[in-house]
Length: 169
Image (cartoon, rainbow, N blue to C red; front, side, top):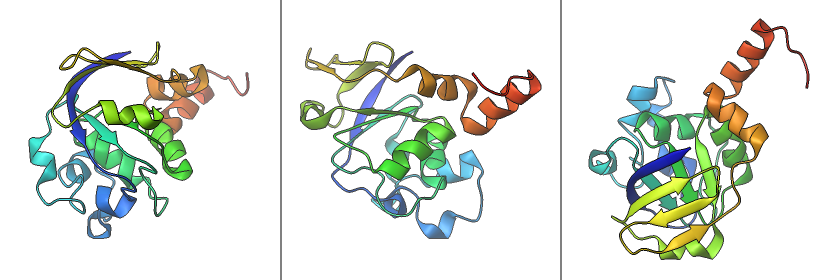
């Protein structure tokens, strides 16, 4: 899958409370959570975001509590992918379970700047910065995780497999 959008750079250790503060956890509605995405980092942050824009994070993106609301808020804001130096492990799994693409690029995240136009090829594991002409490589999304993303997340994936009578691979 190829995703093209503007980079929104955030720092290291962005926790789930920065992504979606606890006061908004009264719903799982994607639109409501998306309208409040990153409110704990900067009030009104989401107003700069357009559909298919991309978050570029630092180290340990998504640390903190294991709330599924955080990847839902990012998706609800219209952001289909987060590129970061590294992810908190529970957020990494929750992201894919909710249908959010996550790409870990290590120190190469420093080559991506706020406002840069990015073209992300999840299958090839290439992030092309069309603003600077540089490319960053990372591991492509594993096929098993791509299946979850294609289905729209873990719940949809399991539901479809059960409807098809498929119980294991």
